[in-house]
Image (cartoon, rainbow, N blue to C red):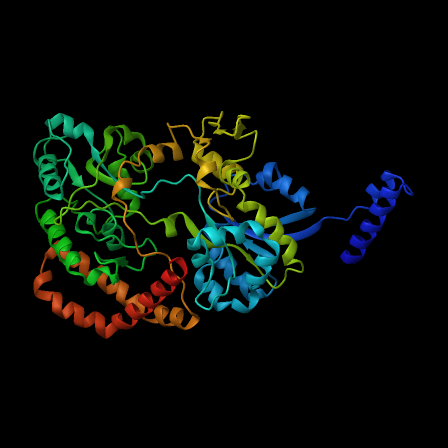
Length: 521
C-alpha cells in the first residue's frame, strides 16, 4: 500500500508539472508519514522528553516524512523490562542509545537484529564517508566477522584526558606547600595533610589525605597511574605496556610495584581507613562536606562534578612523574567518546532503508551539534558567521542538565569534524567548557587498550572465566594494600590466575586487539 501511494504521488506530481491538475489536488494526495516505533532509555524521569518531537528532531521527521513513536524507558527499571521485551518477540523497529542493549544482549539475540553492512553502503553516504576517513569508527562498528549490527557514535567537543587529579589548594596554602610534581612529592604532601592541621580548624586529626571507594579498576586509572597502570574503562583490566603490547595489568611488574607503594600509603595513614568498606555516598559526604572538604586529593572529570560546593578548594594537578620519570594521564576515547549500539534495527522494521536515511543525517556537523546540546535557536545561537554559541540556561540549571533535557546528549549516532568543532563557542564557567579548559595534561596522553570486538565463541568463553578472575584480582588487591605481603604471595597468585584461565583470556584479548589494528592500521 505504501508503494502504491508513492507511485500515485509521482503521477500526480507529473500532472502538476504539465499543468493538467491543480497544485492543491496534489497536496491533498501526499503520502502519510511512515511510522517507526523506537525504544530509548533515559537516565531519569526528571528530564523532559518533548524534545524528541521538537526542534531538530521534529525537523528531521518532517524532512523524511516519518513519525516516530517513542517507547521511553528509564534506567532504574530497564533491566527487568528489557528481559521481558526481548523474550516477548514484540520488538520495536529499533533501539536508540547504547544504554539500551549490551554487547551480550546483541550476541544472545542476534537473530532479532538486521545486519547493516550493505544497507549502510546503499543508504548512508555520510557514515560511509566517515568509515573511509576514520577507521576507528569502522573498527568499532564491525565485529570480527566483518558484520555491522549497529550504528556508532563519536562524541564532539571532548577533552583528550578523562579524569584528572585535583589537590586541595586551600590546604596547600594553609601549610605553605607547593603542588607536588612526582609521586614521591605527593606522598610528602599527603603526610603534611595528615599531621599538620591542613584545614586550619585547630584539630590536626580530622583530615583525610586521600579517600575513595577502593576499587581496583578505578585505582589503576587514577592513584596508581604514576606507575604506568593505565587500563581500559571497559572494566577488563587490559592495558598496553611500554612496547605497545596488550597486557593484563594486574600481573605486570609495574602493577606489583604500584600496589607496594599503595600499601605504604595505607600503613602511614595517608589513605582513608574506610577506603575498602565505604560506599559512594559515604565518600561523597566526606569530599563535599558542609563547611569544607575533609580530603586533600581527589580524581574526577571536573572539580565541581566531584566536590560539589567545595570545588573552589581544589586545583587541577599536573600529572605526576612516576618511577620511570614519565607522566601518565587517563585517556580512553574509544570507551568514553565512542560506542556502538547507538541505533540497532530489529527484524520488526519493514523499511530499514528509510530509517537509515534518517539516521544518516545524525552524522552531519550541525545535526550532531543539536542532538548533543539542544536545538537552534532555543539552546544554541547561530551567529550567522559560521560560528555557534551554546546558550546558558535561563532557569539557572546546569548546562549538563539542559543538554540532557533538550537533546539526546550522549546517545544516538553522532560525528562532528574538527573544523566545525573549532567554531563552536562554549561557556567556560560550567559544563564541557570547563572540562576543555582543564585539559592541561593532554600532552601526556598515550595509547590505551581500545574497545575491541569479539566473536560469539570468544564472548561465551570470557563470560565463563572472567567473573572469577576479576573477583580474585580485586580481592587480592584490597588484601595487599591493607595487609601487605605481595612479594611473598606473588608466585602463588600468578599460578592461581593461570589455573582460572588467564592465558586463555589473554589470547582472546590479544587476538581481538590484533584484529582492531588490522582495521585501523
